[in-house]
Image (cartoon, rainbow, N blue to C red; front, side):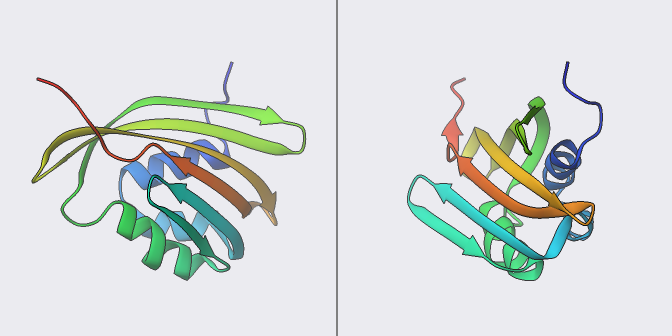
Length: 125
């Protein structure tokens, strides 16, 4: 049974709300953040860069995250795994976006994170 609250679940909920102030609270200032999307590798070594140059690019002002369709968390050795799926609407239509992440805490915040993203997958109908 996944925990009701964890760093990963809190992160996914904050990202879905595009509450980047809350994301900043969850990320360690010196987070080691790496991401992989269908067309690019992303990297940041601090929370400000991870938010401004990665997360706000992945979900920009034109992307309305309407719902968290799926959220699951689990412990894996010394790391946490979180998977989440968002319903997203933008000028191009309706999409599902799924991400899987592994994270490691540092000082009660996310200090190391690796995220793999499905990209924006069109929803038929």
